[in-house]
Length: 442
Image 1 (tube, rainbow, N blue to C red):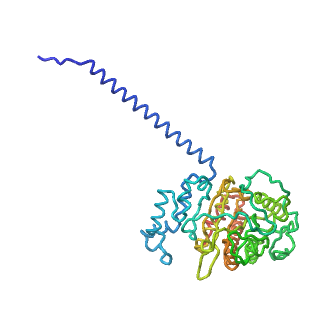
Image 2: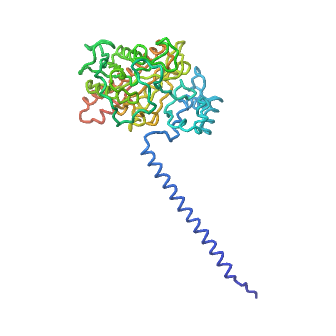
Image 3: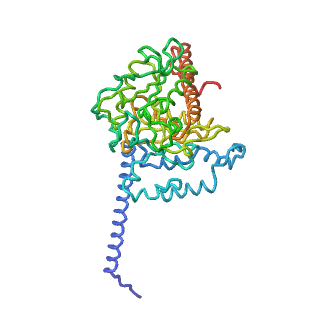
């Protein structure tokens, strides 16, 4: 009979080894749980604290047009594809998107190639929120900056950024000079067109058009070919676009106030860096005098050349537009939603005019753009330095038509809501549901 000798020492070593592995596994498990909890907590905190999508994938995802996804559906449902338009899914577009996704370099923007290596070049760029069919290369808007050769009454930029909201400029309140706010009003007893008597309290204006940078001009209107055209003549700068827009809104029955203030001439100690502080006072004054103002449109122009700011629709040329949303405004998403309503209708009816909706933070300038005053306050850049009066007017009419449609549709909803509440005074929830556009028959 044989007996096996037990190696107690060896068994003890194996047991200690297993226990050590178990302790290591348990420690790693605990650390993993803590890591994921910490990661989730930081993610929630970042979402709540960061009002801007700068650090998110939204800017890159926005570079895909809505037609891209429609064409993807069309691959499975052929009848849903639009055969009249070129497909958005192509080898070129796919290659560009994948290349940008992997390298963070935009093939259509050479500056992005060296943006990471040159200090300050890649920091603080505008963030693409919604792409436009008129901007297939995803090029950001270029700001107007005053410099040499400015028109009389302007002040060169000191090189600084626009003051963030809350800091007061060392200048008096605008609007007390010789060129006070002029405006238009609907044909119900109001003043005449732009250039007539100033709007007085009591007029029921719905839309306010104004200009924080009123001297942004257009080469064809000046008979020039500069890279930074500027003029104090409101018939040769963005003031003309405001006039076009106001007149078309008036023609569609929407009472409009067009305010054109040459702050450089009316404000003592004028400083370009405080432009939005001056225009903010103009808007606040108008709001106090016109209690029914709903839409606030700050008209600017882009600084790119004609080829990048013009599109052709049915043989006619139109100035293209950028929508700018300020992320220094805590409620910027509401302003983006309003801009998206205009952008979507442009994409549907006039594809090619919109160059997208772009967000800017305080690192790119003011970053707020008076948009905290109303959720329906936006900045629109209409055309570029080389767009003609005809191109600007065509686009202005399109924008006015869309804004007028939005207003009258909102009035229909309010009217339906009032009727529904009158018919169902004891059930307001049912009345509100009846007035909802979703429940209205088309």
